[in-house]
Image (cartoon, rainbow, N blue to C red; front, side):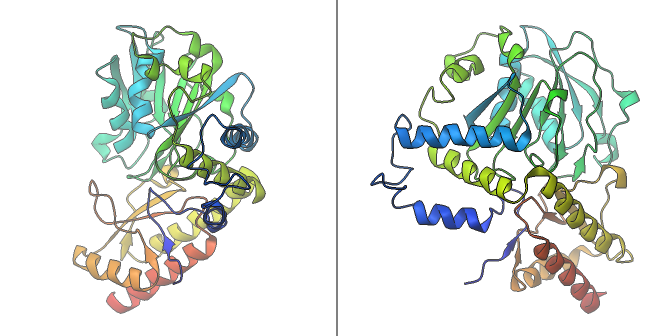
Length: 361
């Protein structure tokens, strides 16, 4: 059976070479006599996987030595709950800039543990634009400033890193990490759930400036303490070893494909092609996001008549295009075109958009 082009936002499409390597190594990892998922995380085979994955990720993202890398169980939402526990003193405020559903989720996750403040928000505009930087109300004594680099649901992305002064900038890069070159030094902390651009669901990456780990934070169990996790090399308890292994394969695939520079060019072409098809449909399809804030990774769009949604999705599946149904928060459609989506997949989607419009326009 031929594999479909999977436009799902996460768990998302994985590179076929990664899946094939995992398939080949599933029963026995190298000559270990067992699968990597059956081997001890303290054994030499998995320790080599973990060390190689970190080294490859540092190379892919050009992570400086004064930044630590953690591989944590769970996803980005778990990280959001742990940020104030690790980096905000009791009673200290943290500033949140809301540009979509996940920025708002991060703000809500932080509220029980710190004086989370909304420094800026575009919710009144339906999260279809970025709040102008001049309107951000940032506090000089905030523990950190949090942004969501790319909003998976609303399709809004920061085109450049905002200036926030001396307060550490914390960013959720779950849906855009490794999609283009990134100056890690502009951030105090970057985090990303793996299930969009880095691998399977169930593991996240936290990249944090080492001096921030010296903050006392708030009383918390050792399992929730990033300092303890770093000292234990992300293995204070049994880690999600299969997910970590798959993340490593995905990072190595991206390096083999030319790294973030190659993907930046590829992703720009894919996004431009898809937006041109939507914008050129004469209103049959519509993307509501301000052009200067449009995401390269997640493209929500709406048909001019919602009664066409069901036949659109049915026809798309028949054409080998899956995962296009929009999030329940917005409805409509959404095409997620992460690194693993080839340009041929976007061309197939554009062809289908045009063919469907000819039949139903």
